[in-house]
Image (cartoon, rainbow, N blue to C red; front, side, top):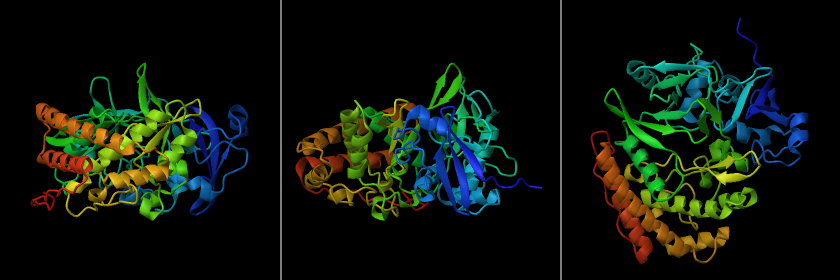
Length: 439
């Protein structure tokens, strides 16, 4: 007989039991902090989420769900995993029961009375054949979750196909089991979009070269095919033990459900992100605001139209302060015909990246209170991004993972930077289509 569905789940943070989730309906559940947590941290403390400050009163379902639904996979991956467990796609509570042992950040959601796995448990090391097989299985086992085998208990938000793995000190790649924390994300790319692996590796390298903190990524080959291996910035290896670092994305922090992650659908705006940083930031606020502007400039120049509220995150520190998290999930989507060119977050009302001129930046500065010198800062950042793109292209060639799509991205960045510098429009190159319909 299958086990009866749970009616309560325990919520752990950094190894501390901080609260509980109670199921109150097919698609409804609510969160409450334990009395011990309220006493230890105090009312109003920033602990689990900016949208769920510590309090004795239970949070209703509408306030609970944005943070916890934000821990779960999105899109077709969510549907596939849910069907494998015999659940409806809308049953977030049931998915958290089965996947919540290893989530983004330092949170773990487990059945009542269970203790989350530590950092030195549950790794199945994979040889190249086994790793390739896991990648091939991703369409039916997103993230590597196999309900029939009960192989993995983890969750990671997002729609892009990915495998959540552990990388050992000796370079071996393994699969975490039983809720053990992962350290890396392996993205296999998508044959519909030529050079997608190299595209993301390049964009992350560019923002790092430009001076931003960014997720570290490298192109590896599995069965001679390029794959992107991204180191998780919410994990740290200390004395051979994996420790979780708490973070949340901007949608979670603002209490916005994942389905509304785009600004035009009710999701966060840049002004809202700036306001969030001002409310939660500590001594590093000035740097974080500067980094947010630099990240936004990079997204425009590189052609990343998918920088929505779930692709910007905060690190929540034990001292109850928040910092802008390293940049992640940056892909130059504008180089692929058929994908929307509109920015996920408008700049001064402009969603067309080719309409983002000095005036758009001035309007954003007024909306967000960023000061009158914004145009000079943006132009300086734009030059840094272009210089970084040229440098990163050289690195890609030297390391053997250059792809023609990188040249397209550099051309877009150069032309958009010129437009910012001279206040006039420059045509964006038209890309030839390949047999797969992209290039």
